[in-house]
Image 1 (tube, rainbow, N blue to C red):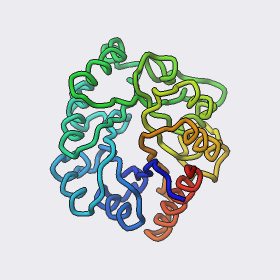
Image 2: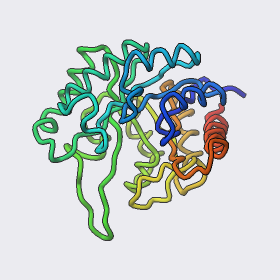
Image 3: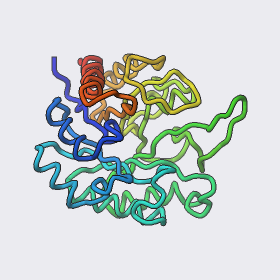
Length: 261
């Protein structure tokens, strides 16, 4: 049985493969779309190049992940708000309406101070959804470091739209099913993956870890969710292209199966 919820592929799922290879894989395997993780691959940060890839492969871009990760601090400049405006330029150019953004790091004090209101202002200015993603405390042994401000958990913050990532909820030791219930219609975007709950952000194939991925997707279906579900898994240790593709197929099959009504 088909599902009305689209399942798309994050370009980060083919890393260290290229953005171009992610579009090609998504088209060949049968994903409904692509989320562009803007990063150190120059193509991912080139609005015209991304538009051409989408057109060539006949795969729509469903969301843009702004370069707000620790490793992408210099992509599209170093000014955080400038990155989020540039993400809007890409979203408009490729015809999508969702931008995924991480909360600020605590050392980005000025950026963090007005972040909640700033996100609301961006949504009004650009007419787009800025879905703030759940993160997690950084843990070393028994110690925890709060790396994000105003908080790593967006559920309790006054964001109109939130992204739930199941690898991140696993690292944070949160219940993602309860997050769906707590967020209600503020749940705007999903990154499906799995985790064993370690301090590492694992991004395993859904169904291979300890997260309640099947129950989460069933709850999402029950609520009538109409946003995007994006597979964001780690395939860095894949021995070859075929092994990586098998992982992408398994993740897609699992997600579609558990989204069925």
